[in-house]
Length: 92
Image (cartoon, rainbow, N blue to C red):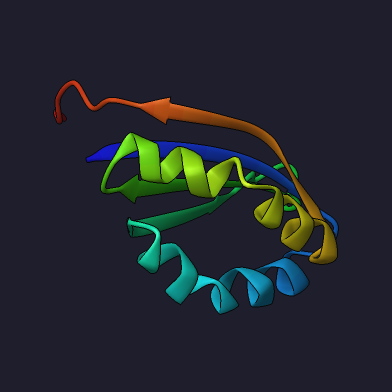
């Protein structure tokens, strides 16, 4: 498993969220296992998504595709940064 942190800027959260929800099956078919959405408390149009993906290769193929960039642009959003993470441990 690999974690992917995607930092997005959206023009309108509700519009973007509708587009995001429509791609659930596409993400799952590409190896996504979970997606946890967060909004910046000081800027609600700054969205972070923590994905859990089956492999880094599948995550990269999906996250860095031109098709995704075009889809996000149509949703009034853009990816600011993508970070691929390897979990080291879980703790309190």
